[in-house]
Image (cartoon, rainbow, N blue to C red; front, side, top):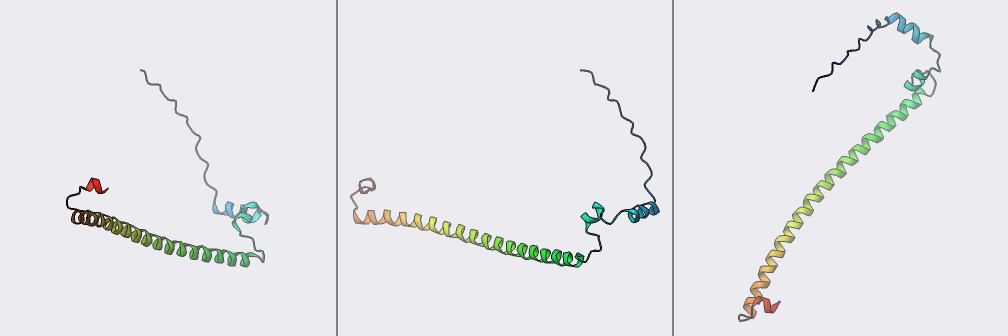
Amino acid sequence: MGSKAKKRVVLPTRPAPPAVEQILEDVRGAPPDDPVFIALGLDDSPGLSQRAEDTEAQREQLYQQSRAYVAMNQRLQQAGDGLKQKCEDLWRAGEELERDVGQVKQVALPGATAASLG
């Protein structure tokens, strides 16, 4: 098997980044309804403080939901551990009951076999 020689594509050199003055000039020359400013919420409309309050309320709500989630998760973990312990207790009680029933059968009918008592 022969290896294929890969041709390397030579990319053109990158242009120099714009100077700070050029960036500021572009920003100052952009209209106020430019999608970048609308998407970033940087306009100076009177609703800006209302949006900030809404954002803060949303953050607080998310925080409270997160706290409730963590608390519920901890309670579920504890409940799971409790159920596991109760399951083990029931398993042991079942085994003990089987032994006790076997002993009662042997004491009650010493000549009878366990299979005939059934």
